[in-house]
Length: 113
Length: 114
Image (tube, rainbow over all chains, first blue to last red; front, side, top):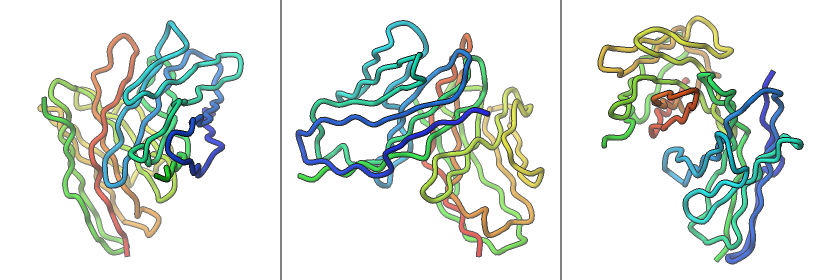
């Protein structure tokens, strides 16, 4: 069965610190990969996505993620976080052509001004 | 472009009751998926509707059912509510193209079962 693991449950950083959130998935076929963000009181929004091609993808608000197929990983990075990045971050995986997303349990990021 | 909308925002029911949640898809999207997000968890796939037919289902019992209408809006119905059904219910719409399934989420309906 497919699964998505986000090992960091809660990350606390100071402003300007660098961020890396881990995401590993278990599925042997071709996948689509996503990072969603849920700001306090708001709905899930897509940060970035990987379908094919360049494994380093750039998203909104300065976020990027790297797909490493051999490690089944899709880690999210940002060189310098801001207080406004405080949110819950979800990694999600979909088999190419499938109709559903498998989500990780989420990582809560708190950025201290 | 109108995004995904859901109603109601909040709902309180008692155990054993039935509930209907509604979703309007983003303009131009013909596919609607429903997810359940329990507190502290990631969303879990309930089912998807495409062209008014169920097009895939997650590990949820038959008392979770749905409908999609010709305008692509959708309903999620839950019968015989249980305390564990308390969660945020998310609707997502998409326009699957060449296997790429990018989904756009609504704000959710918070269901509390007492």
